[in-house]
Image (tube, rainbow, N blue to C red):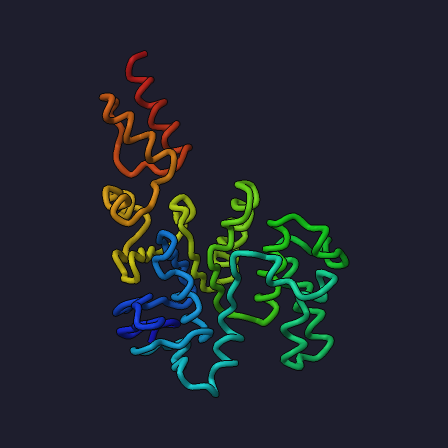
Length: 277
């Protein structure tokens, strides 16, 4: 059984379908990106993954546990952390170390273990030197890292990030994404990264595209960009480098398909220029 499984899941609000017939599997240690425009159902999907919401019909399993079983809810949420869009809404303490300790303290974890988790979690997100700092003195990106550290301190096996970089500047977005990639690659934490920024999905093992509450595609980043003509249909914008490459092709410059980073674009343009030397 996969780490997270959706079986014919529907979610309705006042008779309106927010999600329809969703079937998906997320394996342990995978980095899965969930891509979709605003209103596509991404946040609902995130909350269903750790039992914050329950399906109207169908079933969601986490570690083999059905989220509809109330007695398993705490275990599911302890092992599947979730970080939301606004870091200010997730910080509950006046000092960084106290905020990270909040979750384990509520689970009655002993003091020595809490100290170990604070050190470990803040170390993983690169904020060990901010341990005694007030969250109000941190940047938006640093606050989001504190929220991630708080989830990690629960000794979580999986981390869901629901549009966690939307309110951040480009530099902070890049820092958060690099932190998440490290957690996945070096610590084997299962990652579900929910975003509408197509340039943020490049390191994912798998990409799920949501459109109007349905899964429109389940593929790899490379395959997705090779079929980018679908982006307009899904109300998504391709990465800047990908759009520039498309315009250059229309001008007669021969460039390969599958260009989606600025580094790739620059390298291919350099190759094209060398032909004329």
